[in-house]
Image (cartoon, rainbow, N blue to C red; front, side):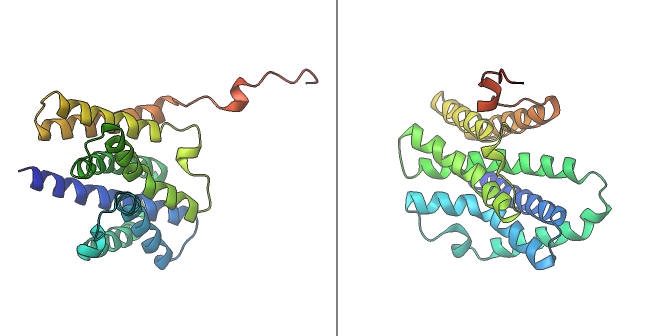
Length: 211
């Protein structure tokens, strides 16, 4: 049962992240090849970074080339239908939030098979959640969300920590997965809707007396 749950979660994660990459690429005026490339990197980048750091081989998309086809298909389909979606930004935020939450939990679960350190498990989940998005934003020529005031990496930290804690308290894996994903997605969407942001250096800097 666990294997089926996480396989389904993985398909959701790579599909939504491929969509988010394609949508942002469209906003940057990329051609179809660019959209497919950015979508694939977004979907598979975080997991690749995590696996390299953990020494987990072969990489997921190398062991299962069909994942490449799924992400290429999702990105291409998005490029075809997104032109008819009038609220691209809202769609981008939603699919990206789904991918962020799902990849964070998946990353934590994979790390648990290789280490007993809860800190490394959560960090691995965060890398899985934000890695693809960072690569997407860089390829699209913008400052990554994780480096701005957006609640992005913080959401991954909360979701990963909650997942690890629930399993430690004996909660069933399926329930822990659903709760962690739901909380991560919910916090990310609420942060966008209500403008929750982290303070920056400029916020705390004293006012210039000359102005």
